[in-house]
Image 1 (cartoon, one colour):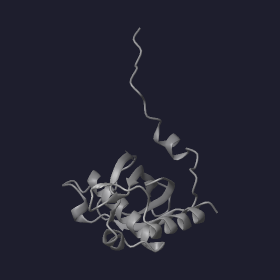
Image 2 (cartoon, one colour):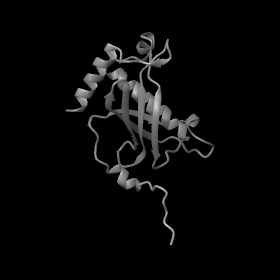
Image 3 (tube, rainbow, N blue to C red):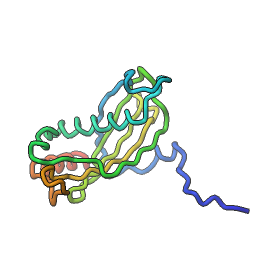
Amino acid sequence: MSQNLSPQLPPTGEIQNLPSLAFENWFEYTIRAQPHHTDYSGVVWHGSYLIWMEEARVECLRSIGIEFADLVALGCDLPVVELSIRYHRQIQLGMAAIVKTRMVDISGVRINWDYQIQSPDFQELYVSAQVTLVAIDREKGKIMRQLPPVMAEALARLAAMGEK
């Protein structure tokens, strides 16, 4: 009798019911699957979801007063250093969806985010993901020792909003 030792992912329904993380407030960003987001069969290409998550994160930061162009001007960049994504259901050409994002926590210069891409009525989960960003000094090409003060203050406000 052989045992299957490979790790098994929990069923999609179980992932939807995982306990909520630290911050409850989600930023919501509406998208619609356009022809350039899809493959030849009209199904959204897997990389399009990453683009939508980036757009949602940038808009979330803008909503708390952090313009990405200002970060670049300060000599700071926030590249993705870790990404975990789970595709639950496909989105097809013409369908609308809501990209929900929230900052989970900040550990030094590491910023962790959660994502869910859902149907507009929130009844279908298409994608769930986690992303970790790190603040980089663009000039030196090295990880910063601390976040720029303007960014640290804005993210602290976002964290405070999320804990309510």
